[in-house]
Image (tube, rainbow, N blue to C red; front, side, top):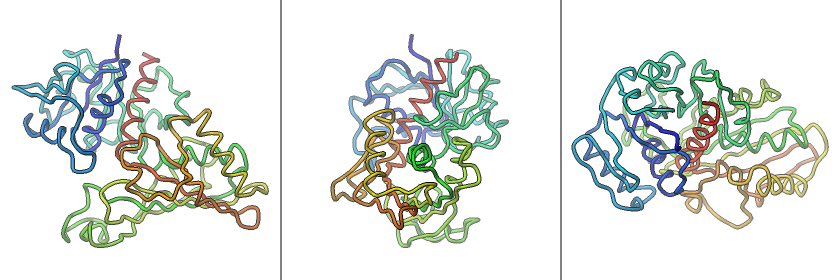
Length: 335
């Protein structure tokens, strides 16, 4: 029997998770409930027509309290309090918390009060029972982990590459810069924001800002705790980002060896999570790519045998949403 999932928050990630399920055709999970403050007709319209990913596959219909995207009716609710969402009435196994408003363990756990059995948060989360990056540490999920963080899209992009490198040539210390598409918390015109750089118009500037993604890798790969840091530059593109990862290897290596290691991982244990590219592509070519990261082997460089640079593209919406479903399925194995 398929796991019964709920989506709480039907914004960019919530809608992409549902689209990813429909496009995958997978039958091990099913979304049966969506909670969102927006009206049903608007939710259905924004699901069907997307400025970045195009029109959704299949027919989209809706009515009073429901929406159907081709896999049966999905109940639609509009509760502001997670504990008030009727998870128990709908037999929800796992809530995908995608609202962006409940990113602490205590706040996300309110879904459990509503009858859900587990919660998977689509963002970094304060004090979760675990932070899980599918393809890297999903095998560590245990039955006592009730609230799990899916980490960030950038951590999902960096962790597979860092894992391959750490297990082979070793990482003494590393620094990542993500050249990141703008996101919904940035204004289209200058406006107030606690980060004064993010207060500026998203489509008009390259905007240096912070990210905890590199440090978060230490939560997923404890051997790298304290060895990684990073920053972000938000750029005027709507989707697809790229990680520029430089590190000092613990032993001598070469460009050819690093590329061989990445290729072997992408074709073997990390197939579907880590991809590779060897063609002269640009960011738009990776739109709607389901991998967490696509290592661009044309951009790998090794200096003086120890200083390594790896470039990895990632669709910060689609790849991450695909991993939400993968992690939900893994959590389901522990119920």
